[in-house]
Image (cartoon, rainbow over all chains, first blue to last red; front, side, top):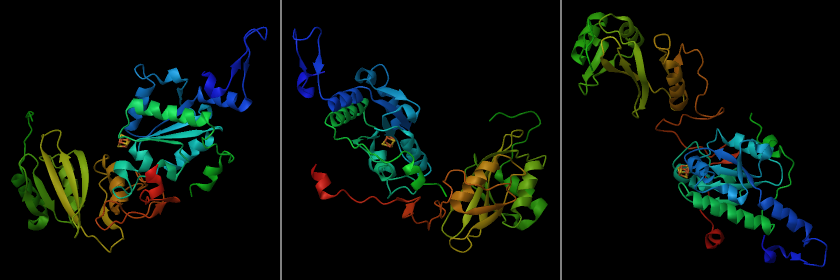
Length: 182
Length: 181
Ligand code: SF4
């Protein structure tokens, strides 16, 4: 933890043990940004690249991030791959099941804007994850290298630290109600 | 492919001869194609009968439906049955032409699920992508597309949807203020 960023001061000898002072919101965002468990939304070829990120070589765990398979335990959703119209309601539902605060990282051209399967070329895929859920970070590439995903994660951490990340306050399940399958 | 004992490999000329013997002169409209994948076009009215004959006739024994392909040529639909005989080791593509019907309406064909169970999924897929209704199929539910899909995507006159399930299909080009950042 860097002193400058959190404006923490360590008063040596003034107190019996080491004591750290900070503001509560800074402490909370520090805790948040260092333990981002992410939901692996493995939708297409980008998913393979996302799995690489948690492997030994790129090792996302050194940033305190671990893959989660349950949305109830996840803080971040990495949308990796092509979103079809068939998948879109499920994506929304999983997003609704994630507890607040929640963040979304859109990985790859497909989930940024439709990419190869954008609206001009495909009838069945959603042109961009931001059409259905709010996205915090977009990582470009087809597929992005694992380093790019790590960069995206670091960008998200910066946003959380500066409390810019969009924390949405709607009650869980709102999205589902809106999109109830007829 | 290796020959088996008691098997007889047929070429398309022989196939046409056998079918014309059985169903009359008009049963096979045209034969030809790559000798490794001989192709025959069947008369539309007799198609189901001929296919049944192909599946059970001793000298043909086309017992394995490898694939079922639909084609929209613009004027008509074609169904191509890729059939293989596991006994005689010969393989034929049998083509059947279908009426397109009115634009937007479904065309009809008769199902071959009673001859080859493999057709269950193949016909469901064709039904939703081409709008061809297979009469006699036990259930033509959607297989790949989401429920509530309008139109038949693999037809030539298909137009992409404006939206589906409340999600707008089109994506606006990047706005200037976005491009700057
Ligand atoms: S962006 Fe490229 S690699 Fe990623 S899912 Fe789309 S096509 Fe596959």
